[in-house]
Image 1 (cartoon, rainbow, N blue to C red):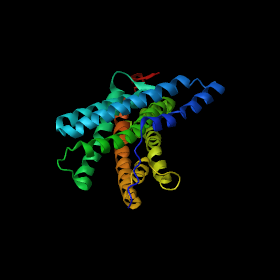
Image 2: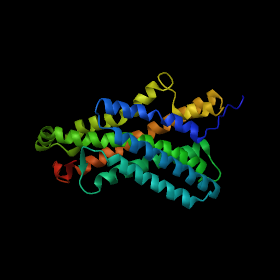
Image 3: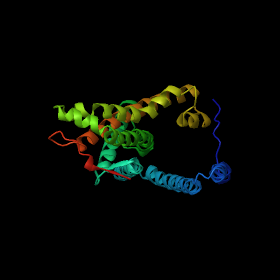
Length: 267
């Protein structure tokens, strides 16, 4: 197959960046107040990706496990911060950050390790060319699910307070009392990945598959890679949402099976 890889330069990317002006124009015309957020988000994206590119170049050349682990820790911590930054009801203290970060870290590292051992088998096993991109894609997608799950759990616990307390008052356990809230939270957390899986290939072509095809990879091989990635993302998201919601329920109750909404605070 002919290699169709097209090398891009700053001018090409700059032309595409002009499309953000359309966002800004809509914000101004309809007085959405999003102009500053659009600019800040665009600048953050550019700076973060450029820094990531430089860091990855260094890591790939160095190929040292200690530096790979350090980058993984930084990625997980930033993901934890993003997962809890926009919650309507936050856990008091650092509990929300701990739940989100711990759930994403456990799920993403476990699933990425599974893929490295069973499918990719890099030599050495800590090769950053495999570890960092895989973990980044799995972590980034599980972040959405965990964030939505925790957000919906807090809202459901607040809105369903009378029903939860009624179940607890008649002798129900915390798991029985929180069952409806847990169900709603996990449904919301899993919704994005389920929507992506349902529409993948018909409504949209995923980014990884598009990039491989543009780089000249055989389309069927690109499909296999994308299927593998989607299964990994779904597995990590499901595990991460379940862990985060279970930890949230534990925090919103106590050993005497009482509702503890005092451990939540509104933004």
